[in-house]
Length: 51
Image (cartoon, rainbow, N blue to C red):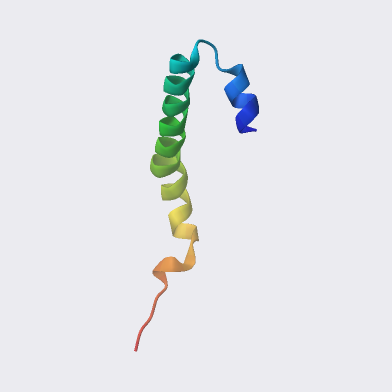
């Protein structure tokens, strides 16, 4: 999958590296601001009890 993405990025090497960094930052931002807050109430990590 990563090879396919790398082959389809346009431009010379330095531009491909910049585009790959932008893609990674975008995916991380999407996960941190959309996916994880949506999934957090569904996860059992807040149901911790200690006695």
